Length: 131
Image 1 (spheres, one colour):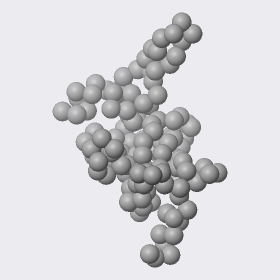
Image 2: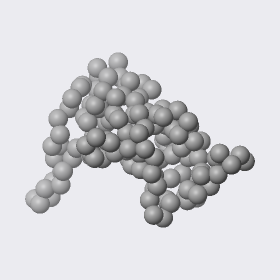
Image 3: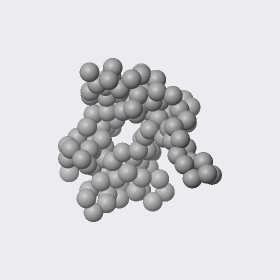
């Protein structure tokens, strides 16, 4: 392995070869989504400057925005103190990170009466995004 990729060895990959990833908007600090990466996804993200994740359900690499056009331009890649969580500081192209057409995947809020409620608006109908 080349010295250029040695940094990938410092990541603590789980038993499936994955690491959890948080995508945070660089300008606002908003947490937009959570996903997984394998070694190849993290390396390609670093090389291309756009977020590429590992889809556990499809069992393949997933270039964020490949269908919707809502790509994520990576401004910084960080790792936590235990080297087992990656943080991407990103610019969300089109302002929509969620497949529901919202800015963030974290649009549901818990209320003390025991319910979850969507508190952020749909910015674009998913039928118009994934036509």
